[in-house]
Amino acid sequence: MSELQALDLDQTHPGRGRRVTSGKDRPRVRDPRIVIALDFPSADEALAMAMRIDPARCRVKVGMELFTATGPAILENLHRLGFEVFLDLKFHDIPSAVAGACRTAAAHGVWMLTVHAGGGRRMLEAARAAAEDGDRRPIVIAVTVLTSLEGSDLIEIGAAAALSDRLRSLARLSHDCGLDGIVCSAADLGLLSRVFDAGAIRVTPGIRLTSGADDQRRVTTPGDAVRAGADYLVIGRPVTRAPDPIVVLDMIERDIAAGGG
Ligand code: C5P
Image (cartoon, rainbow, N blue to C red; front, side, top):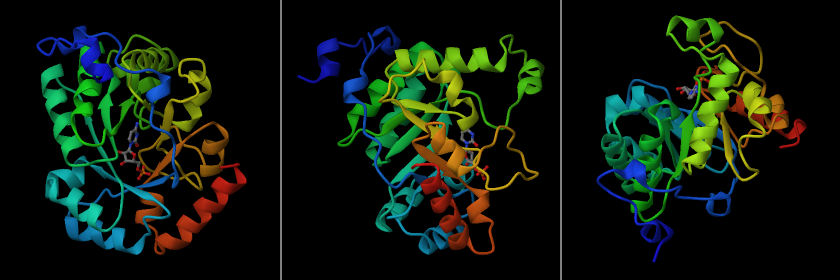
């Protein structure tokens, strides 16, 4: 009997189940640690980029722009090219809707998926339980506070807590609900060190080799991200919009190695 069956989760009210995982059954961090965000408006552009990079050097991320354009066919195509796929659709809805989406994503064989921690306990527990339904359970990661947001943005949306408090409570809740880890800025990892156990997976977007003018606000270099404890580094535009993506990938790998990764 699986751990989940033993816990006898109430499927009608999935959030009423007890905690569904512990540190010991968390997936292990495996190379490669670079995840390239394929934020493109079409399958042709995304696959053209995927064909220039090597699955031995990076995984790929499919986000809402690409998935909205292509549907799940892109997952199959990227799997055929040999990539493990991070499906980053940041599910945030009522528990049954998110559970259905996670179950379907698991059936498509994705390696990792995201849900918004702000969806609350019952949604997070339902997501984690539903991900068990496929042949190979995807890593389920909670998005805490988007790396494009800063303190003033939170005030504007009426979030009462300071960014650091909000981060900590969302991370603690995700951990408590049995999620495998979190997405956050590498700059925030220090704040969260006591919330997660050593086996929790830390996924960090907002990676930049140099400071630049785009929509990311809480950014770090690849080396600093690894030094701060990042397990997987999500990198999009610095690679995908570069004149030579492979040159940038080489630089990122060197910076990660210099950071001890
Ligand atoms: O192009 P760039 O390197 O900024 O891409 C970062 C990627 O990480 C984007 O696909 C974005 O959706 C994703 N992401 C993020 N912040 C989060 C979670 C995911 O930037 N908190």
